[in-house]
Image (cartoon, rainbow, N blue to C red):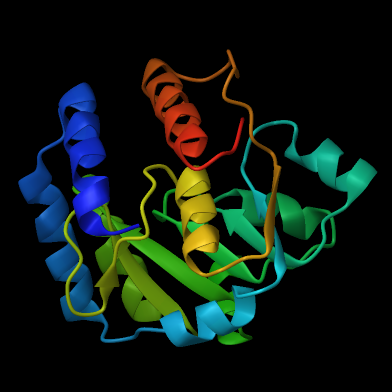
Length: 208
């Protein structure tokens, strides 16, 4: 998705949640100063022309993995990576704003799992703490205007951003697990994010 297509949606999101775009831009600049890494060529090679399973972190994820399994390239949205590991599934890619990962992420990254780390105005301390520790394949993303080695594939929360990324990288098909946009157990803020996830996924032909 070209940024010119994404920008109107982005500004709607900022208005909806009272986010400050300037803080998103500041976070992206900080991330870029922390790492010059850019593993997008490796990511495209991994995904292009292949079936992909994107795993969100809804409560249904574990049972869906246990009953149906996963196939193709496995992309985990943030804390979904931990759930997959408990099921014996190693994610090929983790898309994260860093609020749901743990030490396992560094180990996975060292052994080849691509980390797609998102910088936004609310996670600057986590970006500063985690990015220098990631020595494997790494891609930095922003929801604001992309620049240098900081990309914008589209999408807002980790799950829908992972789907947008897989589509941008040329996946032959994308299967969703662990997505539940009707989850009533979440906080009001998370409920708003699920509303937006549903809308953004519908923009590119997916339901949750």
